[in-house]
Structures are given as structure tokens and as C-alpha cells.
Length: 284
Image 1 (cartoon, rainbow, N blue to C red):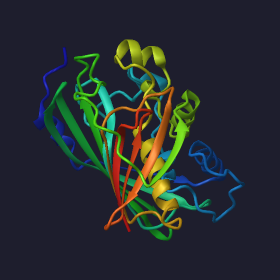
Image 2: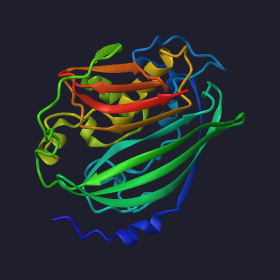
Image 3: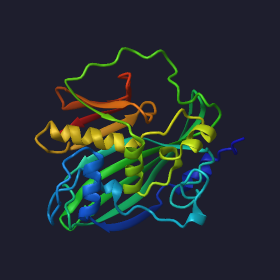
Image 4: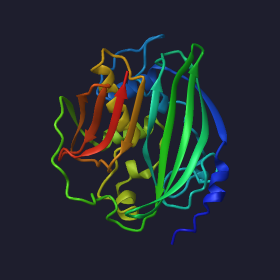
């Protein structure tokens, strides 16, 4: 049984900060381009990296002895020790000011912005919001809010849609790819993400009760951002807000979709049935 959640204790983490730096090199740029089905090329000094390459840089590194069963670091360091076993990337917001380029030294400053509780269909939900600021010698490259959700493992049916799916939305623009396990593994490697739900099928099905490997939330967001930029002459949105709707699983086709609106674009990823799994809004 999950431990009692002491929200007042968890909120003591609000305001905690950390900072990490890295250098944008050609190798992660090539790897991310390949993972996003872009032309790989031979990135040279000064060449622009994919818009979400910051998720591949300056990632925390912990010894194996400091990892918990799910592959994440033991809780209670920078992030609060939420006593709920399932952890997912729920959504967030990105503001782009400048791209990262090969050769840039980037610094990410992170701060716990909020810790809140809600009740969902599967029980208690704890949301942790983290603000990030990514800078280079040229100034601010991007601001980000990342929303992480923790929930209980009370039901193996938690991943199933609660309602009968509506008709798939139509899209003015659509790109389709396969949610291949190798694609998920590559992204885990690029982001040094040890979370076993993305590569360990026995763990994700037998322990967490999902039907298969889970597609990374930030990888879905990366596909959406790149499609938005592609449809807007290569320029990233000034602001991109997104949230996960339901898990996207391995083993079938997925699509990245966009519709133009008066204010910008509505974008989403969808599973093989056409049901949205993540939605985003982009403005320029």
C-alpha cells in the first residue's frame, strides 16, 4: 500500500534549484536527427541542432547503487520524494528564443516551482512542476515548464481509456512513423533515461501492468515541435504548450498531426487508431 502523502512535507521542496552545463557536440545532434527521422548529415560548428536537443544534454548521472526499481534515481534528491510508484511526464510549456548550435556551451538552471495533489480515476495524483532556463553565451535559448505526475499502481487497467473513443480528428498535415522498440531505446540512450517502462518489456507489463513499452512523453513533444517548425519555415514556435492524454505504446504506427488556427497551430500525436495521445498548441 502506498504511504500516506504528506503534501506539506513535499511542498518544502518548492524553490530548490540545481544547475548543470554541457557542450552541444555533433554526436547527439546526429543521434537526435536520426531518431526524429530527419536528414542526419555531418553537423559542423555553428550548425543548428534540433529544437529539443536540450533534453539530451546535461542529464543527471547517478551510480547504479542509487537507482530504484523503476530505473529512476532514488527519490528525495532534487525532486521531492513522492510516495507514489508510477511516474510520467504529464506535459509542459516551452518558450523558444534561440536555437542551440554545435559548439555552444549551454547551462540549464532548474527550480521546483510547485507541488500539488489531485484525485483522478485511478486514485491520488501528485503533480510536480519544474521550471528550467537554458542559456548560452548568446543569452537565453529557452524557458521551460515541465509537469511530472506521480500516481498509484492500484489497477492494471489504468492505461485503458475511460470512455469510448471519439472519432479520430482530421488533420491538415500528418506524418506517420512506426513506434519501434529500437526508436524508444535510442531516445532513452540519447537522454540517459533509465526509466524501465521505455525498454524493459517484462518490467512494464508484469510490474506496472501496461500492455507494452511506453513511448516517451518528451519524444512525442519533440516530434510535434519539429513538425510545427517545419510547417513554419523552420522557425520554432515562440510558445508551445502540451499535455499527455493517454499512453502511446510500441509496436504500431503513430502519427504527428497539425491544423492551422487563427492563433497558430493545434498539434497532436495519435496512436494507430487515430486517437490523440498528446496535444499541443503552438504560437509564433
